[in-house]
Image 1 (tube, helix red, strand yellow):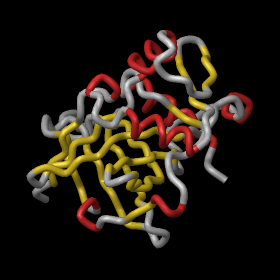
Image 2 (cartoon, one colour):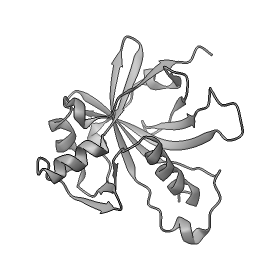
Image 3 (cartoon, rainbow, N blue to C red):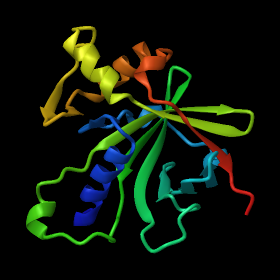
Image 4 (cartoon, rainbow, N blue to C red):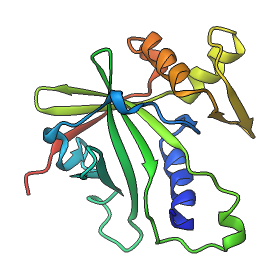
Length: 196
């Protein structure tokens, strides 16, 4: 069972990514999961503000340790979050599915922890000239598309946050229909391999 702290950190990660969309269901089935050894290792945001460390796991997934401001701020306040990551191939387009891992650095009561859900985050992944571009699904675009009836997908709304409840099949259909729509994904983070 995931530790109670993973739920909170997943929520914090969502906020930090400003408007990303979370989902109850994954973006992949077993036939969609692929493994690329070139993703393994330490990657830095091009502006050196965050660090992404991918490790391979036995089941063709990755363990991601995400260091928020891990390069610029050398203090004990650095946020470190762990995720289970699957690399997903949908018709030749690649996506990351991030799911909260074991995180133990924020203390909260068990009662509070039971109200927080573990969710999946999706990001489009492109490899260009030795760099990875990671673009998360854009929450503002999705809200507007749903309101304008341009997208019909199952979801729940809590405050201003949308949580997708659609099946994996419907999630895949939505991302593939919008994979080339620049508005559907937030500005990509450009990751360069660490020279360590």
